[in-house]
Image (cartoon, rainbow, N blue to C red; front, side, top):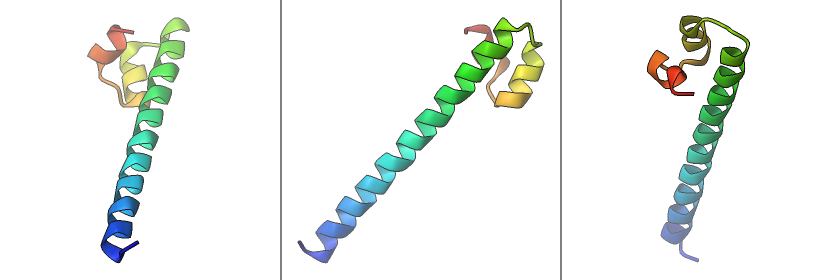
Length: 60
């Protein structure tokens, strides 16, 4: 395998890994926001803690 092919494969792998991690973090934020909302936590506090917008939280 040529060095440029390896670099392309490594770059694609790293990009996919980063995207997967970001998606997992977002899913965790949503999961936590849902639980806090179920527990009656104020939406503004949920937004501050999770980083989700009030609009996003209201849709949960």
